[in-house]
Amino acid sequence: MRKLMIILGTLAAAGLPLAAGAAPILAVDVDIATAGIQSTTTVAPGSVFSVDIVIAGVEVGGSLNGFEFDLDFAASVLSATSVLDGGFLLPVRFPIEADLAGSDVNFAEVTLGSSGAVGGGVLARVTFQALGVGTSFLNLNDLILTSVVRPGVVVTLPIVGITNASVLVADDAGPVIPEPTAALLFASGGVTLAAAIRQRRRTTTCCEVSRPS
Image 1 (tube, rainbow, N blue to C red):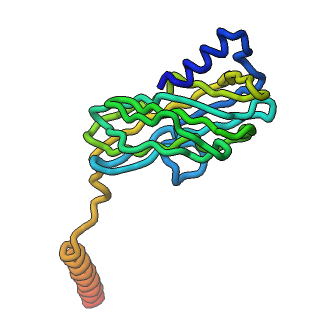
Image 2: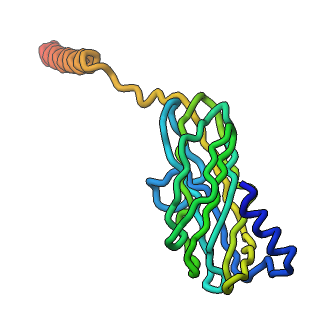
């Protein structure tokens, strides 16, 4: 995943600026079906789930034209099965690296257009399969965000903050639900017990009334 870094190093050697005023934040969202950023989740062994690499706070003065990242995880707990473009960069988007290593995901992408993306959205979506019981971190590192400020001039954007995540893989026993036959037996037993109590109360009342004064 060093292609983008090599390009930036060449620009730096040429004396071009490598900083801009925009300051995005990034996060790993491990529950894409729930609104907001979820940094923790629990899944069952063998399950397949996806996480989003999310960006926010990209300003007009430092729009995004390219990015790269590594996402580290515990290979004994999770296995990365795919990484896909998240659709945040403007067309035409061109992935320059998409590598699923044993314990990390490497992804880099640039836009071939002259305009950059602003605001927030999903940079990439990574799909995992849970292998075994345990906890896996999902940590972003080696992040580079690039912006084309004018033709031939590329800068890197500073990053305000990163919210990493974790996934707990645990056996899901679920709630204990009585078997239908057991439930019926319990219900019928309760009815019988209630009837016996009512009968006993009637007998007691009858006896008390027949007692001599």
